[in-house]
Image (cartoon, rainbow, N blue to C red; front, side, top):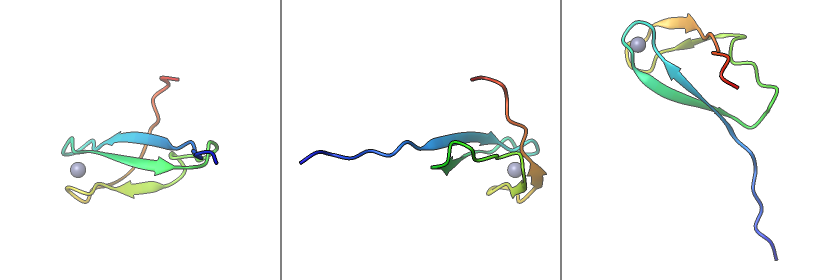
Length: 55
Ligand SMILES: [Zn+2]
């Protein structure tokens, strides 16, 4: 028997209004987080996400 593992991509998101921080996970390498708008879980602000070029 072997153990199995799956790669997960986790985005670290910070709200531009209230600075609340949360994460969004995807199993797909090609997932484009900038494609749609998201609601801040803390203040409810709806904004697009701008991915920083860190990789
Ligand atoms: Zn917020």
